[in-house]
Length: 164
Length: 191
View 1 (cartoon, rainbow over the protein chains, first blue to last red):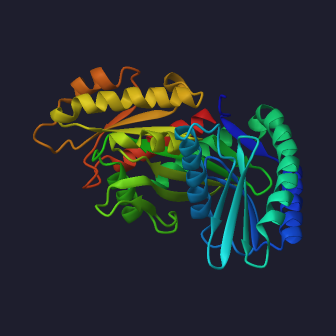
View 2 (cartoon, each protein chain N blue to C red):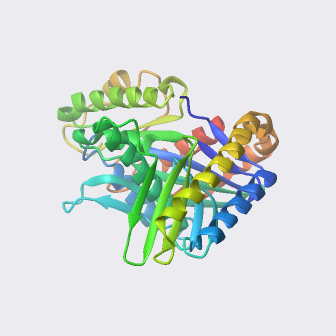
View 3 (cartoon, rainbow over the protein chains, first blue to last red):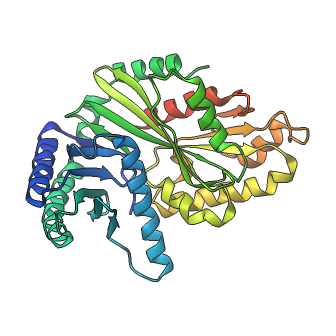
């Protein structure tokens, strides 16, 4: 499937995403919940656990997920749609949303993995519907954000900052 | 795939440094990390083997700050260059908005460079992209080596699409920022 050139998320969609993540976090008693793009970019986070190094976490989790899908291929599996990483105190459950996003739930030993699996499936379906809307709207709204003034300013900033 | 978050006023773009083993991809990122204003860069992550070869990827986030009300960020990645890590290169390429193809200019590496750019083209095709209209910049690295091939030879065989190209000695920083500026502008122009 061809990848999109860009994905534009509006205020309204982000509000729905944040509500969905917040609900999932409370229902599972997770320490944090994140939505990341499979390219590694963080779309939204809820909770305190993931705030530190959130950018690095996004890159690493997306990398680990992508790597696991290639492992699936080598094993002749269609794909692995989820990853569970278990620590002494913290666990991470990652699940794919419509081949584009990753829903990440960070939780401790007081939460049962079964509950996380069931509730994340429900949230993932809801987020999938939002993603459909985002995909449909992306080309339409691009021009309003990336206007000539923005492009010119960003070029000047690149020249100013990316130098010895 | 660039992410434009209107609600939080953020734009994120992903740039991948691609090329053969020991061509200087990690060296490019290390130089940027050392030389750029510390307020612009985040922490650099390297997933490397004990011998410091890149195993998975290097990652360096750069933050341009607010531009016309939008916080603009570039995430720089490298792929592992060793031949056996092809699957990993494909994984890192996922969602890339632009590519810097780093070439080891030494004559003995010529064939390997050709194989690598052919592989890049194939890998982009696998993720539904066409190198012909994808933001791409070439970097002719290791220009200080005695066996470095003339630039016109590299241009002829490795840059058939005539994309922007830069001579570099990444270990001393020569050409590193010129390359980064060019790919960043190509990526923004494509959005």
